[in-house]
Every structure is written in C-alpha cells, then in structure tokens.
Length: 193
Image 1: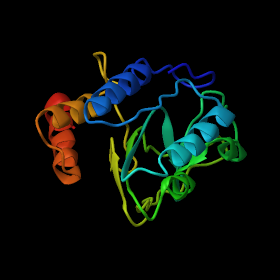
Image 2: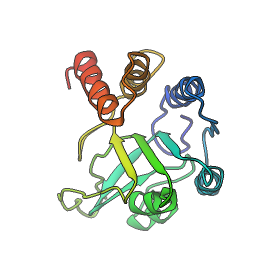
Image 3: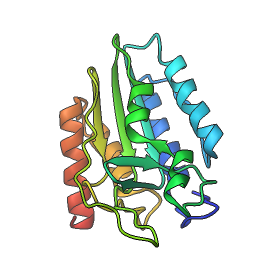
Image 4: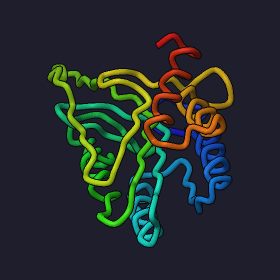
C-alpha cells in the first residue's frame, strides 16, 4: 500500500487480511506480509516455500504494484524507485517467483492482484510483446487483469479481484477452475471490464 516512489494503493492490506481470513476458514495456515521492501519481499517468498513444504496444497496471494517490461512481469517492493531499466533488478521477476514457489509434491495456487501494464522509460518505449508466464507443473495462476492491462484497486474496502475471490469461495466454488471463472464474472459485473 505505502509505496515510497509509486502511487499509494488503499486496498492491498485489506485485501491480504480478508483473503487470509477466508483461507483460514478452509483450514489454511496463513502468513501475511505488508508493505515489504525488497529484502522483506524476498524473505517472505522464501518463508512461504519453506512453510509450504509439507502441504498438499499451498496458495500464494500478492496484492500491489506490478508491471511488464520486455517479455517479463515484475512485482514491486515498496522501496523501489523505477528510474532506469536496471531498477527492475530490485523487483520480483515473475518467472523467478514461480520457480521459487513450485514444488513437485504439492499443488500451488498463485493469485496475482497487480497490473500487468507496459512500462516505458524516458529514453524510449517498451517493446509491445505478449508476455508468456506459464505455470510450472502442479501450479495454477490467476491474474487480476489481462496481459498489458491495469488491475483496479477498487472503490470499496477490497479490490475487485480480492472481493471476487472471496465471493467465489463463499458461493461454494472450490475447484480452481470454478473459482477463476467466478472471479472473472464478478470483476466483469462489478467493473464492466
């Protein structure tokens, strides 16, 4: 929420708290992190991997700023100032994130509530390519927006994505496919996008 060099987002903390509360109702142990700088974000990902080692199913949820550059997605810690392309080295790169989250002996669900918009730098523009971010074996991903799109923070207490996920779970959609479809329908109805 409290980015030092990027726009304030009002809902990520509430999104994470409410998603965690809902997952606890389904028996998940949850670990929540808020307003992480680069090292805290990397540590949180490592902690998730270590805590999920003995699980049959693990769910990773990220709410915050994201962008695409070239053929990669990046998720932003609160302390990153994006002045040049090399600034992206302090961000969490999407393919690397998935590699860190994967495990051969469990199902990992990844929900990414962040923009996937193209970043431009003062000296030129981003190459407009479709970013391919495919899930490794035993992993599924739900993005809050399309490739190149903007995720909405929402006018209420939750982002449309977080609200759609919680609504989908509460309606009894517990298979991943049903949940993804439920989120998509909810966002379409709520935002028209």
